[in-house]
Image (cartoon, rainbow, N blue to C red):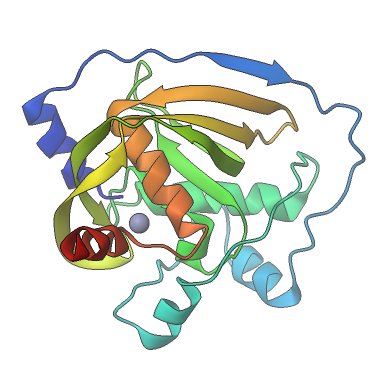
Length: 213
Ligand SMILES: [Zn+2]
């Protein structure tokens, strides 16, 4: 998602957020590689960790096909050099002055893996955090209207009306721990937007659904 959306929301103001979390250790899980293929390896390792990756856009035909694909599960492994290199470059990409995003998903840079970065507006200092294999287990019936933009959809911002106000999220962290967390308000929209990307869904699809209704 793009940063302009946050500025808009901050004008409106949003409530203080609460969340809870539980941790389950996967320390006993076997160490495995993430099986990045040769093309993915090349794309990731072709530049240093300070270099942003190219953001794929729906205005490019080849990119738009890839943005519609479903991503693969990734195995958390802090010892995997390619995975480490990739998450660092993905963060640099979303924070790049050319992007100014509040969230990004791996397929937006051509890597079909279940990895997202989200800026946590519900935490002090609004930190960016990385999530592996995020899955939304529950949605509230309560919805929220939210203006959305996307790094992969240039010059377009629209208000969606069907995003859940809160979600129950499960994910893995880079160190292999598995967590469940309740997330509310604008940050919940960023998660819903980025997790959609992992399934080839764009925010414009939600607008189309609303139009049909
Ligand atoms: Zn997006």
